[in-house]
Length: 150
Image 1 (cartoon, rainbow, N blue to C red):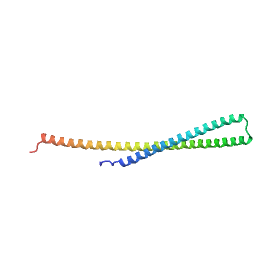
Image 2: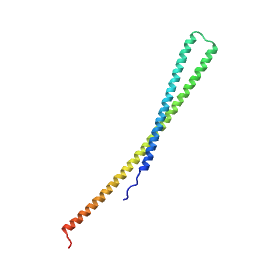
Image 3: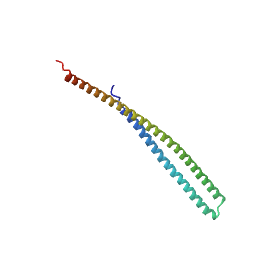
Image 4: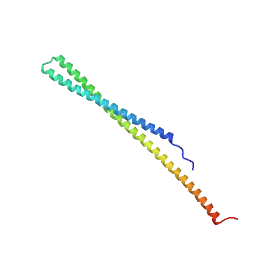
């Protein structure tokens, strides 16, 4: 049996792939967090704008001002919907990143198990060779002691 091939380079490649998948997942989660913050800001701003409008409307407003407010609130609602779509896309991206990370970790673990199994087989092979050599020496020593040739 020959010494098993070193899987170090392949292991390094799999580790880099796993590390890249981890980085991509972390980036996607940061981007989702930013998108959530932006959505909260939009919601807060819409509530504040509506509260200001309510106070202002009590004093009476012109139809033009009412139309302007409704248009503004519609645009704000549209921005909120777009941000919700962005969050949904971020959730999908995170799911893809998590799947890629899981696959990278699985591939790395499989390769590590293969390397361990090959190393164990090699060690067993070396142990058998050593045992065989020891048995041969013991047999030769036994022959010299019990069957000396003259």
